[in-house]
Structure formats: structure tokens, C-alpha cells
Length: 241
Image 1: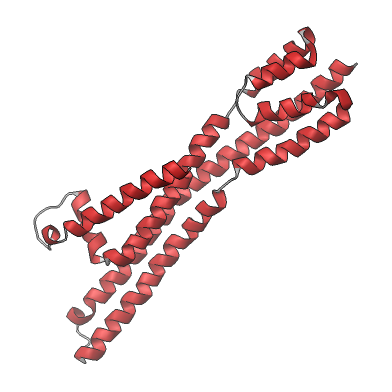
Image 2 (image 1 turned 90 degrees about the vertical axis):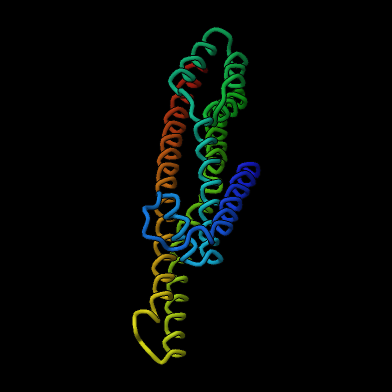
């Protein structure tokens, strides 16, 4: 997680530095601009200092999202195959063989199976309690850092709205100084207000898409964990008879 955050943070700050260094080259022109050039220009017009905070929220949010996606993909297990292998191991080699199958398998389901098998000598009820308890631990690991992602989703538009307020204050300050309410006087402040809001909403939308995918992935893994745990208890009951 720290490596992912560091890499994305460095990339973001390099991007932020590149935007500032090209300020002179991005002056208003009627020539056609590429999407990248337009994005940099709008970023600068929205005040790089303030927009940089929104960019940091995007970078940190993406770092967490990528780390969670990688972890969840690694935690995904073919539960049907695992249950079948454990069943065969119990029938042929007993509990120790089944535990060996779990040790050689990756994912939270295999870890839960191992905890249940490790306590089967104390009875099926003890094994069931171990499965339930360790299932809660694994669920916590699956949901780790997801709350931070939801924080950045909420924070990005709030930062954008703060930029809106600051931009409007700037517009009214210009009106007070110039004693004039002409469009030319207030255009700069209003532009900052609108751009910061747009960028904040864009960041929130991007992170929300990742968040929904992560939540759906967690729900899928948890459902597999619960279904597989029931199957394991059924296997242990059959083995104990």
C-alpha cells in the first residue's frame, strides 16, 4: 500500500509541476488545443494552488482503489474447487490432509477453512465458532481502507464547492475595488468558482466508480465465504459421523 501511494504521489506531483512549468505556453489562443492541453489550461485557470489539493485527493483515492482492487483480485478463490479438494482430502487423508490443501491455497476462504479444520478435534461446534470468528477477521481485511476512499469521494466535491465560494468572494472583491459590476470585472472570479466545482465533481465521479466496483467485489467474496463456510461445516459433520 505504501509503495502504491508513493508512486502515485510522485506521479501526481510531477504532473502538477509540469502544469506550472507550462503556464507561459498555455496562454489563451484561438488555435485548436488537444484534450491534454485544454485540461492543463483549465487546471491553471482554476488556480493551480487550490486545484492541486483536489488533485492530491484524486491521487490518494486512486492509490487506495488500486491497492484494494489488487488485493481483492488476489483474494478471489475458486471456492467450488477448494471445497471439492477439501472433501477429497478428508475422505482420503483425514483432517491433516485437508489442512494441507488449505495451506497450499490462497485467499480468505482457504484461511477460514484452515481455522475450522484446526479445531475440528474439539467438535463441530468449536469448528463452526472458529469459522465464524475468523470470517469476521477476513471481512475486516477485505474492507480495509475502503472508508478512506469514501472520505475522498466526499471531500473532492466539498473542496470544489469551497473553491466556488472563494471564487465568488474574489469576484465581489473586484466589484468593490472597481466599483463596477461589468462582466469583465467578475469573469475571473466566476471562472475559478466554476472550474474548481467541475474538477471536484469529476474527481468524485471517478472515485465513486472505483468505490462501487470495490464494494461489489467485497460483497461477492463475502457471499462466497459464507456459502463455502456452510459447506465446510456440512463436510465436517459428515466426516465426524
